[in-house]
Image (cartoon, rainbow, N blue to C red):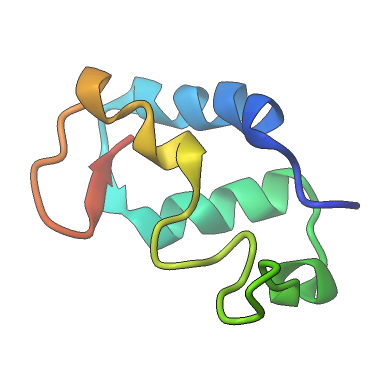
Length: 81
């Protein structure tokens, strides 16, 4: 399966925020990867620069950036959701 775009990621991402649990961002990314049944090959896909993974990069993409104003981020490297 190709890596989902921003719009496709948004609803499943927002669903993870409904339980109020604080978890590492990496765990949210792992959950999304499982939900979209991404393969190891999908997860190794690089951005056009060839330097960062498309799905797993230090900032897991716009889907995790845009909800920030609406969600509390109580600790560095963790997200409420």
